[in-house]
Image (cartoon, rainbow, N blue to C red; front, side, top):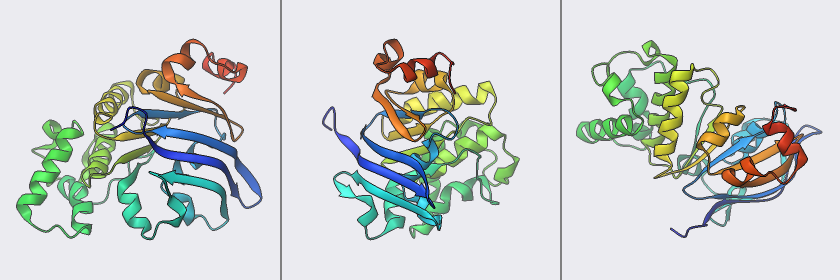
Length: 253
């Protein structure tokens, strides 16, 4: 893979809920095989931007988008099969949304949707996903137990296992640790760093510390506009914009 290959190219993006403009003229590239953190104060458009990347906003009746989002050069709002696209660009939400099924069936769900029925194949792929999600050792004796019995941190890692079992290219995460304790948060952060070896990761986070700890690139949004974007190490040491500096030092947000 080329060192600086873009997985997404976003150009002149405006997003509206009804007449209210949430994102204004956002243009940015997101690198393949890297962790990109979208940070900014509450209400700045972080989650809206993330949801634009796999077209979840399509489900909101009064949502409107202008501009373009290209995924490997293809406009994602012109793809034929949205569900197939979402299997390539998958989402993990802020609150773990485990299904009312067993641990095993939660992870196997997407595989069965794809038509995989062979028990040996299902078992192998579920185990591999749980291993990659750093959860196998904790649940290998609980595969037939209800997933809702797991802790919050375990449930979030289960959701990540469910996302990666279908072999996506991009994992989008919307504040995945905001409801977790520090120990569970650390486990998720370490997991994301490991997953970035094989996937492109885009994470919305309210935590400046988290963005600086785990990301390769950061996007800083303020009032719906992209203020600054670049390598995390550079922005952390010497932000170009005063607004970014104020956010990083806690003076706004």
